[in-house]
Image (cartoon, rainbow, N blue to C red):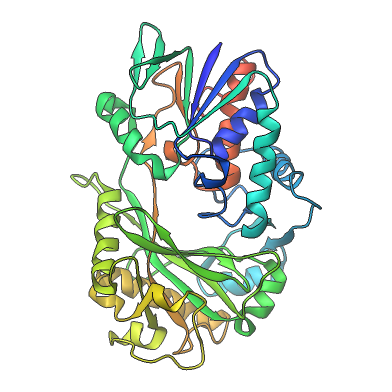
Length: 423
């Protein structure tokens, strides 16, 4: 069978790893110019892998498979050197958070690090490239995908027996084109996570970082919105994430280079009802509003006290940002964010301060915007030989879940009677 994979990211890696030793002819189409410039090569991820049933997506991924794929990534590091942690593996911390209204999320963590992730992905690529049945096509931007007499045609030229789309959230232009042609693919498209990146000195969360490395919690705020932590980076760095027409904030951590601060995201999940059907447009609008205030290519930075009291920050005190000075402006996030979202974040931080004193210190830092887009949830049962894997499917939102999704779709090709019909 002649198979096309559109996009070379985590989901594609899982798919190829399972099917590479078969006799199928595999063609990988990636719009980046080479492996080093692809969007998964460390720019938007810091190689944080986890094994958990409570986060990462809405499909059921067996824990054994999750750990197998974690080991697969670690096996491609130079000396198997990774940082590890366990979120709420011990009872005292679990009980402490639970008593204050938080929902602790249990998970095992394995942190490869931004600095090591590029090497890992390069090694994986070299391994795949050595297989005679796998062919990579870089600088190849797929813009159209359509059914044709039982086969699938891409870019009005190449014809395949089976096509797998794994373009991630950044590939939404292609997904939007496909959905326009086959609107019945959409199962749900009403959700977006909007929030901030919070930065504070390591010593405030030192015990928490030592105990877990990353703590994952959810909280039902008094506004009715669910708020959650995401991507905790002990001794990490705040960075920017460029989406082309707007800029957001993100964070990462390195294995070797360390800072004096910890940063993590605080995200408010917004799920609206009909006639709302454009969560990406809504989140993008908020991001553009923030960028308008901050200046092109910059984000807003504010102290927590001023964030809480709706005043513009003009000076910092004891906590200094790890984001470079020319990438932020001191300002007031309240001018860009809806008040209900601001109140949800404040409620979350004040309650978290009851568990971890110092979280709500007035000079801790708040960056905005941080946004996590959910792709449209797509129906993989609709088209027999066209499948969507990883984050672009709307069913995953992590490296391991995306990798596993690709792996399971490939397993369905290899052993169709032994895998679930819906994945």
